[in-house]
Amino acid sequence: GGRSARGQRLFDHLSQLDDVVALADGTLLFLRGGEAVSYTAGRGVAPGSPTPLADVLPGLPAGFADGVEAATTDPTAPGGLLLFRGGACLTYAPGAEGAPRPIAAVLPGVPARFTEHIDCALTQKDGTLLLYKDGEVLRWTAGRGVSSGDPRTIAGSTRGWPAEFAAGPLNAG
View 1 (cartoon, rainbow, N blue to C red):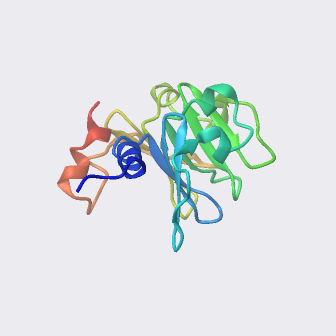
View 2 (view 1 turned 90 degrees about the horizontal axis):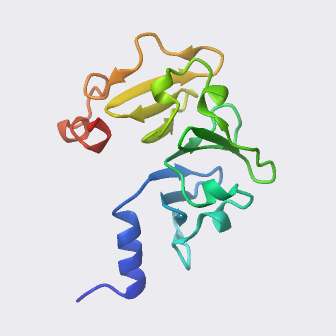
């Protein structure tokens, strides 16, 4: 048996993701283009998913409502998000949406090649922000800036990860 129309749409969305980000309430947003699939443990996928990103994150500026390249929790603002598109970064918190700013203004000290088109962003529990781009990873911490020796190759900085990860799309410079 084949998939239902909704099942096929969800499969298509999830098979070509731009990024995944966790909201403060535990909801996961699977982002692709200007749409998001919302998933909450115990409840599953939200009815109607995928839905327009602007409906899930109200107040997004037009360019960001059309899609983001990377997203993560904001290590400097609990409950907030950092959304990346082109050379811009938007600090987003419901009800307190800001204007997009250059990545270099939001993350001082980041090398020029990390100020455009971020492939993926993650925030670790200790508040360290990981930016992935063209096969490299850069660690940035508020108040300290970029970690010594960064950026590094993904393959050279992912202890314990399967070899397939280091050879994957984030490593395809």
